[in-house]
Amino acid sequence: MNHMKRGAESMLRSAPLLRQPTRYASGGKVTDASSSGKTVKGTQPTVSASTSTAPQVTQNAVNDDKIKSGRIPLDVPLPGLQNPSFFTTERGSYDTYVTKLDTGLRVASQPRPGRYCTIGVAVKSGARYEKPFVKGVSHVIEKLGFLTSDGYPDKTSIVKEMEQYGAICDSQSTRDTTVYAISLQISGLPKMMKLLGDAVLRPRLTDEELAGARQSILYEIEDLQLRPEKEAVIMEMIHEAAWNNNTLGYARFCRPEGIESITRQEILKFMKTNYTPDRIVVSAVGVDHSELVDLSKEYFNFDNATWNVEGVKGVDPDESTATYVGGDVRLHQDFTQFNAGPLPVPKLTHMALGLESISHMDKLFIPACVLNIMMGGGGSFSAGGPGKGMYSRLYTNVLNNKHWVYNATAYNNSYADSGMFCIYASAPPEYMKSLTETLIVEFHRMAEPVEPQEFDRAKRQLQSMLLMNLESRPVLFEDIGRQVLAHGHYKEPSEYMKLIDRVTPDDIKELALRMLKSRPSIAALGMVDRLPKYSDIITAGQDGDILKIKPPKHFFRR
View (cartoon, rainbow, N blue to C red):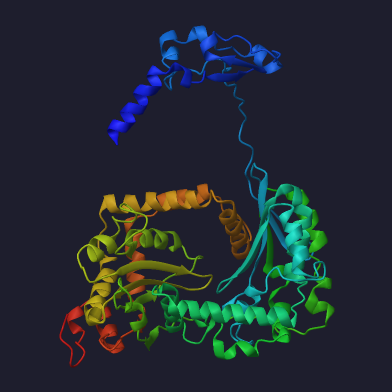
């Protein structure tokens, strides 16, 4: 192959007729590198204001030998092209503006240069507010986002409107917030604000749309069960264990057996109760704030909301305080279907061990975020490659030293009135006792002195992750909406940077000791026979003495 390549190069060098002269476009004329910059017949040289004032680079300024060789180094300007001219501008103000309308609706925005913007709504609504309703109604509402409404009688009209401005839309529901979002060209702001207002306040909720939402939910639940990855399922289970049958313990996903009970009337009743002006924030990134305020007044008229027009009666919103109780949820499940094929997935049991943490209103919230980065973790295989969290404790102490651990990841879940810090892990069933002991040891190590290098690395990593994520326009939009919804104002990233710098090792120790006093929460999925008893875990967790955990009967100790 190399001989053929060298032969082709030799032929080209010996046949100059095969080589076409290099041409450059310059100021409205075409020049030939081999003809000393002569104007090609049929073209007229033109001179613009920019080219007449900018210094010109001619072929005489370039080494003749380099040009004749046909190879121009990267540090030499191309002949016949003008030098680039640049303009400078000072960065404008990126302050976040918040306006409260007479109705109680809050409007928040932050300017950002560019042709595109993101607009949307954050609603204080979600699974934790479903106490007086059929559980799972928030999940159904998520699937009904951006369907037909009074102003858009069919899906085709919605798609055509969005295509004009390159828009995309999405709606998502979590335990405490429901978010509607649209990203679009700025020129389409008025029409997309109309679409947003209709989606939030004036949905039609036809029988066909309800049937489609139910089918989509059933598919999503089935997909969760068939996936080898079980983080989402385990996180649902440990929330149920931590907040047993109250607020944050309600399932985020609609259960299949109750999906038919969620009727159109039930949905409108839930929206009447929770979709009120004082529980909604309209937020945007990349738009003029005064225009956003005017459009919000026009299209967020709650008097013509579907539930008000139809006279639906609501109830008082559930403002119950989340009460952490701790508990144990185990589900025996056979994962044999994942072990078929030439490359079978290892037969694993998945578990999570959690302790009561703090809310995002607590003074130790920032230290909890630092601790989460410090614990880190991940899977035994990282698609991000080496260096992605490899210095975190769960990597160095667990994944790198215990070959049988397939995943160990720390999660800090903070809400308005409670929180939970947990570690998700997976291993073969015969190692579940050893895995439980390992997690208990790591929880107790959090209260031990921290190495300065490890501590500083965690803080720098948290700061870089914060700034990197906020470079994304949709992420910034949601951050603004959630902060204004929770606090009534927006805290700039620079303030969080300072708060992270102020975190001390004593803060980490105080937080860890506070968590270790709480009752543990356990969630397990798979072959759970060899998982220690909950009572044994409580006893061992009180002082970190893992020897107090008794091995399950009839099984050898791992």
